[in-house]
Every structure is written in C-alpha cells, then in structure tokens.
Amino acid sequence: MRIVIVGGVAAGMSTAARARRHDESAEIIVLERGPEVSFANCGLPYYVGGEIEDASALLLHTPETLRASLNLDVRTGHEVVAIDTTTRTVTASSPEGPVTIAYDALVLAPGAAPVRPPLAGLDSPRVHTLRTVGDAVALRDGVESGARRAVVLGAGFIGLEAAESLRAAGLAVDVVELAPHVLPPLERELATLVRDELVRLGIGVHDGVAADRIDDRPDAASVVLSDGTAIDTDLVVLSVGVRPDTAFAESAGIQTVRGAIVVDARGRTSAERVWAAGDATLSTDAVTGVSRPVALAGPANRAGRLIADDIFGMTGARPIPSAAGTAIIRVGELTAAMTGANRASLDAAGIEYRTLHLHPNQHAGYFPGAAPMHLVVHIAASDGRLLGAQAVGVEGVDKRIDVLATALRAGLAAPDLIDLDLAYSPIYGQAKDAVNLVGMVAENVLNGRLRLWYADEVEQVAADALVLDVRTRAEFATGHIPGALNIPHTELRGRLDEVTDAASGRPVRVLCAAGVRANIAHRVLVGAGFDSASLSGGIQTLRQWHGADIDHILQTEGVFA
Image 1 (cartoon, rainbow, N blue to C red):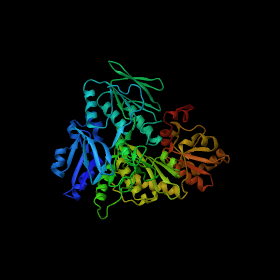
Image 2 (cartoon, rainbow, N blue to C red):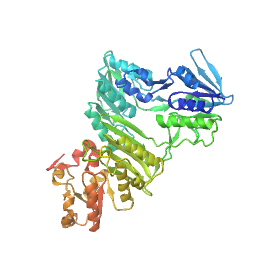
Image 3 (cartoon, one colour):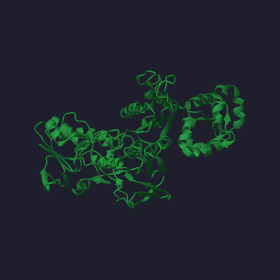
Image 4 (cartoon, one colour):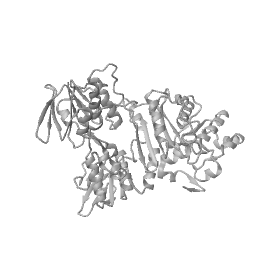
C-alpha cells in the first residue's frame, strides 16, 4: 500500500507514525511544502521571547530522523497543487520541478494559513505572522536587532502569547482587538481579569477597536486605529485568525464548507480513499453540534492516529470524537482555560442553560499562598448536563479544567461532580474541591434550593427589588449598590422585620462577596416567605462583568467608586 500524506506537523505526522506501526511494508510518503515537517508550533511565541533559547528545540523530527525511526519518505519543499481523485494521483511542485505521485490512500493535513485582512500597509516588511519556525526566527531577529516597540493585531491565544513574550523581551507592546474584549472565546467576566493582567504587565490594550491602516516610514511604522489612535512601532505581529489552506482540495471537487474540508466520523472526505484531519477540516462541536474548524494540536494529533486505524480497517477502530475545544493560556501570573461551549455559542445554538459563578481558593485557605480561582460554568437548564466551563487564576486552573473536560466528555451532569473522589491535601486543594463545589451549587440551582440573579441584571434589579447586601459593614463601605440594605448574614435572622419594611412587598435580591453568605441568607429569606434570589458570584463577579464601568454602579461613602 502507498499512503500519501499532504502536510506534516500534528495530524499528518500522527497519521504517518500510526500507519507505520500497522504495516511495516507500506510505502508512506509525506509531502510538506515548508522546510520543517515536525515542529512545535505551540512553542513559537516562547522562542520569540527567549524562554526557549535555541530554535532547534522547536524541531521535533527531521526527514532523516523520521526515515531512520519509522522508514518514512518525507519530502520537504513539496507543495501539492492538484489532486486527481479518479486516477488517484497528486501533483506537487518541488525544487526539481512538478512531480506526480499515485496513491492508494491520501490523507490531507494542510493546516491553516493566517488571515490577512484588507488593511492598507499590511505588506510592510515590519509585519510578521507567527505560524512557522521561520516566522519565529524572523521575529526574534527583529527583537535582537534593536526593536523597541511592537503592536500585536489580534488578542486571541497566539496574539496574547506573542504580546507577553515580546513584553518579557523588553519591548513596549500594544495589543489591538476588534472584539469587545481580549481573548474573545473567554467569557466577558473572566476576560476582564486577563485584560487587567496585561495592563499590569505594561501592555497597552485597545479592545473593541479596529486597525485602520499601517503607515510605514523609514525609521518605524505607525498603526492607526479606527478611533484615531496612532501607535508608533518597530514590529507588527498579525494574529487575527486563520483560514483553512485548502484551495487545491476544493479544485479537486472535494467537499468543503467555508474552505474547511467536510469529513465524516472516520475522517473520510467526499472523495473515495481520501481522508483529512487537522486545522483544515470541519469538526462537530461536542456541545452545540455546530460544524466548525478547531485549530488545536491535541484534536489534530488524535484524529491523525484514528484515521490511520481506519485506513487499515483495524478491528475496533474508533470514530474521531467531537471537539470540546479545551484550551489554556498563560498571561503573566494568570492562567486562563476553557472547555466546552461558551455563552455566545450556546445562545447561537438555542440551548437553554444556567450559568454558575464560583470563586473558590485553589487550595486550603489556611495554607500559605491561597488565592481564588474564578470559574464560570454553564449547565443545561433541563438536566444539569455540563455544557462548558472556564476558569482564570494564579494556580490550579489547569487541573480543574482538565477534570471538567473529562466530565463533559463522559456526559456527566453537574451534580455528579459532587461525588468525584479527587486528590486532596491542603497544599493542592480543599476537602471540598472547586470541582465538587461546582456540583453542589449546580444541584442547589437545579432542585430550586438556590435561585440566582446575574450581574447584567443589576440596573433592573436595583429598580424593581430590594437589594440586600449581607457582607460586613466594612465590606459594604468599600462599594455597594446605591439603595442597598446592609445586614450582615449573621444578623439576618434577628432583623427580618427590617427586610420586610424595606422591601415593602418587593422581591429581595441578595448579594455578598462571592455568593456563599448570600446563599445562607437566601435560605433564611425563603424560609421566612420572601421572594429571594442570590447574585451569582457576588460582588466579585459584578466587578468582573462590568470592568471599568463598575465606577458607575457601586457607591462608597456617598461617592461612586
């Protein structure tokens, strides 16, 4: 059998390696248009900033090592330009000229190319992308050649990693993001924390604004934004997204949607004996069922392995799983991570859900270094099934999101999290781990013991209900909703008459710092016959949701703060 694989890196090389293990006699040819066939593209930003010192560390394998270990015929500098699915051949341009190769099985893993928006000045030599080792080397050369300023266009994962790395290398850095907040897949109330950390690092943040043009000059460039701001810079990093690099497949009649190759659960395309995997393919979202490309290394690696199983018809070969989109990023001292669907994708899919906000410590509060993790978890309104989770914190975020990603893959309902037997020591967690607490809050919400109201409802709640703030008097003085009644939760049972008088028949909406004390107060109020609900996540979530606008919402000692 001759297997031809178009593209290396994650999906392509995983297919090749697995195929070799299935059949020692198969002829496996990998066609890669670039100079490297197996490199750590997720490590590129960290080479730019100097955390990874040597570019050779990014090279996982070479054609020579792959031939020696797996007997693969790896041909770099070979760009596939045409496929004939009738004759089962591919044609590629190469340093020696055009070559045509027959195949018995063809695997397409061409990856994605950077999106280049219609931006005047984008052809400036100061503009860089960050998709290949060559890109990273060129960008680091710019840093080491005396660049002092950088502008990153796009505040997604790669954009923020590049911004952090450039800042760590000593450059003045600004990031520009068209979406309302940085890291757009992250929920608004968590993105505020990431933005604050970028500012703490000394990075200028311009969100909710577009780049209008790049004016190139002999000594520098100027990135002009749609609000009129002009930022002088020595380097521009373009990171506004990627698109499937599939023109050659479309020309061959292989079915695509918005440029992404359509595949079934086995990775098979519309053409016989042609499979596809990686950034250039459509994946089915594990939660919403929506088809979309998922540009993540983990799913690409796993899909390539499963495609090799299908090519050889292996007994028990498993289908490619739908994508949960689990991802993580470091920004300064913070880690942000997510799995499953966010609020926007759930709304777009018409899925009814409830949102939980929690702020538990990453380990026991009495052990030094305790700090909150900020969690947002979405559960199905009907049965409590986990739909998505996100977290931001200084420590322990990766562990919790991985557990929640596993629970989501297993189809667990949120209350099932109560029973997870997770490793506990005061150094690493709490006896009631953050994941267990998600389950407890979810169970209370689903069975009606806890009724929530949300940060985006604050103006309506203040107008229609009595806001009962059950924090201490000192906490209340640091900032409260105007007109709120302050009764610490420990005093509430003896002061219910004051609540009755202040409410005057209106509903009571309770809040505290993070939601724990408000839940206690809520149960007291419900027991006394009040129409009560508790602010999800408390004042912490309120501040995070409204960000800089919180100054217009909270009042301290007669002055808004």
